[in-house]
Amino acid sequence: GSYGAPAPAAANDPMWGYFTAIAGQDGEVDAEELQRCLTQSGFTGSYSPFSLETCRVMIAMLDRDSTGKMGFNEFKDLFTALNGWKQNFVMFDRDRSGTVEPQEMGQAVYAMGFRIGPQALNVIIKRYSKGGRIYFDDYVACCVRLRALTETFKRRDTMQQGAVSFQYDDFILCTMAI
Amino acid sequence: GSYGAPAPAAANDPMWGYFTAIAGQDGEVDAEELQRCLTQSGFTGSYSPFSLETCRVMIAMLDRDSTGKMGFNEFKDLFTALNGWKQNFVMFDRDRSGTVEPQEMGQAVYAMGFRIGPQALNVIIKRYSKGGRIYFDDYVACCVRLRALTETFKRRDTMQQGAVSFQYDDFILCTMAI
Image 1 (cartoon, rainbow over the protein chains, first blue to last red):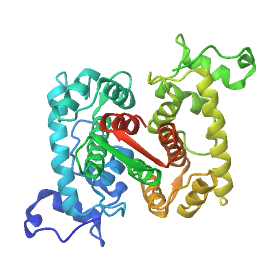
Image 2 (cartoon, helix red, strand yellow; image 1 turned 30 degrees about the vertical axis):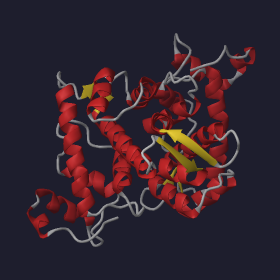
Image 3 (cartoon, one colour; image 1 turned 45 degrees about the vertical axis):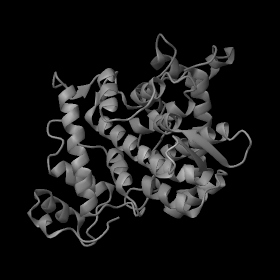
Image 4 (cartoon, rainbow over the protein chains, first blue to last red; image 1 turned 180 degrees about the horizontal axis):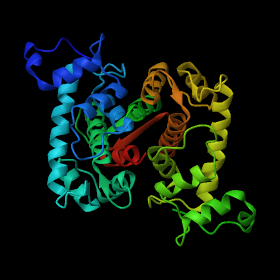
């Protein structure tokens, strides 16, 4: 979903053209439209285009009103995040193989400021590896979910105690969304 | 991971042949091997083969020792679950389009005994739809995650109060795994 109309400056934004061409009437994109938008804009460069799964979690990360769609302001927020993740990935992908190694993924997670233990990190690496390496599409899906789940947790941890109590229904809503 | 060797009866199991041919030396399959196994056995029939993402969550659902792999006993458990979900899906896919409608997905979720509210159901349907319909691969990924997350919650809800307190690290481990 979207909050308010885009700022007038948006018209000068190179992404605005791609976005409006694909968003159509309602001014919002769903996961399939977002996938087309990111593919056509050439964002992934020499890496494989984003999978629908990764585009779905991108939408979910910023979909505050649970419409399953994304407005231009949310799209810009996404783009800022994507650029940061891409820079990190390129930095770690020294041999330009289009992949990073498990330990580099771990370094990236810690560099982004996520404070998780070795067991959680191990689980994440297993979940997002293919043939012992991590590809850009999976790397981004991982970053998106890690950020979204951390925000979900922090939003509920109002006393900042590092612990949150979830009702079953709320737990399923939060975790199945992303 | 696996617990113990398969029962002697396993050798007579038609799945055993597919499994052992692919599992190789270590007697376990990772997500890519599982995908090959399910594709070669023709399990999905006229539906599209399972995506790697769906195979990854299948592994995660039964991966009690976090190895990112699955032994034959776990594979049989998976197969039992898959057959149940397939029967449900086929029942709801009356026009044999290979898809079910959002409200049918909701009926299926309730029929499986998951007690979630309309908002959580809406989020799930949005997350797993493509062009307003739900395909078999996404349907299974949804069932796998719903079952795994419900089990995660119940395992921690020892007093059966319907509420669980998570530390941040544990929350990330549980939710990022699946």
